[in-house]
Amino acid sequence: MNPSTTKQKAPKWFIALAVFLLVWNLMGVLAFINQISMGTEEVALLPEDQQALYANYPTWALIAFAMAVGGGFLGSLLLLLKNKWAKTLFILSLVGIVVQMTHSLFIAKATEVYGPGAAIMPVMVLVIGVFCIYIAQRAIQKKWIA
Image 1: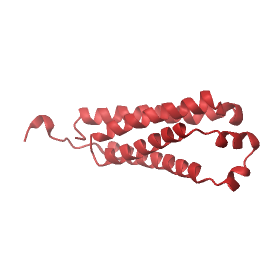
Image 2: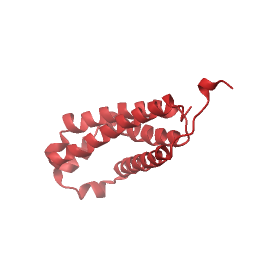
Image 3: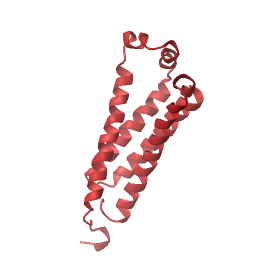
Image 4: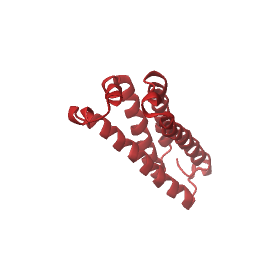
């Protein structure tokens, strides 16, 4: 066996972090499912300005949302399974995050509807998305995943 490709035992904090990231990204998947499953009755209960956001949500932004949460969830699962493809999926997720947040913050101007606090979650999602790539790269370098 080649020593340069031998996996090293991952520290316990790494496993705990991978579980946290899996749960975090599962919440994103649930938010996506909630958004795509909202019927006209539920949308009609929203304030008018929020209804307009839903009515004008383009397909490309929805695809970006799916990429963001799907890539993040699968990347976290692969990180937990100690598979190096986690990094690739995290990169895909980050692309989705950037596209979706660009739409939300700059095109749809969601902060005009939800207020300036609406920017907090997108920034947090972006930071965690970048962190996921960092931790996957570090795990590859430390040979915790292969």
